[in-house]
Amino acid sequence: MLRILLITGAATLVCMILIPSHFNTFFTMTLIAGSILGGHLLALTFNRFTRIFLWAAFALWIGVCIFNVWMHLFNF
Image (cartoon, rainbow, N blue to C red):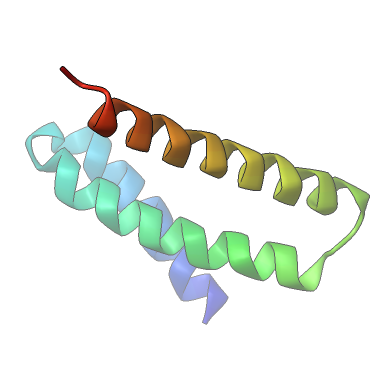
């Protein structure tokens, strides 16, 4: 199953490079494959690096959410 996701992710990256007019579609497919692979990485190898990466990604995600709310509420 993970090999299929790896192949799909690599194929969509190649398609993004070769067919830039369909970038939005291929980027969405790459995000889906990458998030599944990233979730497996965090679930199967929870060591010091992945723990730091998890908290850094969570902090970045919270920052982006706060920035998004800030821009929508205070856009005059």
